[in-house]
Image (cartoon, rainbow, N blue to C red; front, side, top):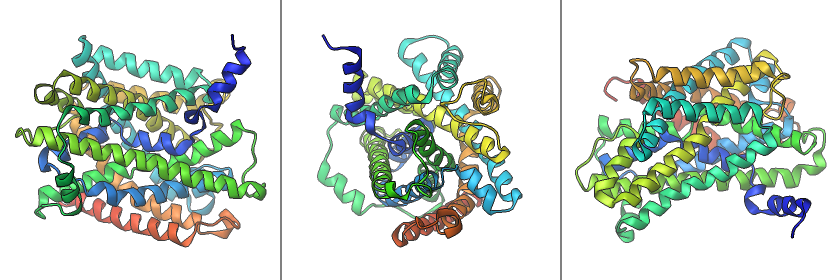
Length: 425
């Protein structure tokens, strides 16, 4: 019989217990809204949108790695660093747009989650949505970060459901490889819209704030000092951030690739080319690939939703609390950081409330994507400027390769933002 101490030691020694913010951030990127976007790409274009994932992977990984680096080096969140280096209107404008976009994204995500539960086990979708939101909110407010983060880490396994879906269909791998490298697409408004949606979904501003602040949460938990104050730890810590982030983003993009592949091999082939929500994609799979495919897809949606919604709400809490100079942190007691938790609660409850209004969740998702695309470009530029300043980063400024990929990301997102605003584009 193992003692309690031995059990705890074995649990903390598990590889999953050692993963950092990078993996959680990557999986949160594949939230239900993201799954809907990937499903639509596969349904509409078959295998001809697979190329977007290998292209977006290094861009996404580079900017997230820089965000993690800023948090670990300075010991301050992204909003706090922006506040100290740029005019107040820059910070408050970005934070306000982030709050609006996150709330709309939460509304679309929780509505999809409620639909999936109702489709799977029955019941009223509004009631299912409310139960899921209140459960998630309770965990964030009343469970300390060092315990809650274990829940988030195990939820990252839910993405494996999308890999399992592939086992239910025949995959012509040679043809898949050919279309990944040599897609057959026509450059028109419809194609541009889907490409914009894929990049806007993959590289999202809320992930920037989340990963930067999660490095600080982990640092506080370990009673570690920022690298500016403890440079001796820099080699191992920066290496950890690099591997954690790049592996987390690879996992995220690989799963997105699988979703496009699955829906391309099933829905597109069957002539189902218009999928507006992830729950619609799951339901459409049932007659084509069987009940097992439906339930695997549904489990994936529910799992990443329970991870993605807290990240959306948490990033809003981090950004506004840092901007206002309030106490914050998922490790903090609710009485100590009540304003931080109030932001999280408000964003989730408002998102829930939007599901009871005439507002179409698909339109909410569209508007959040537009706002994310607009906010991402100046935010990425601010992040790159912060990461390259000695006054902020000391001797730990971002490397040339990281900055080059970061500026490439800014350019891609700028094109995406412009395309989003072009009528019919």
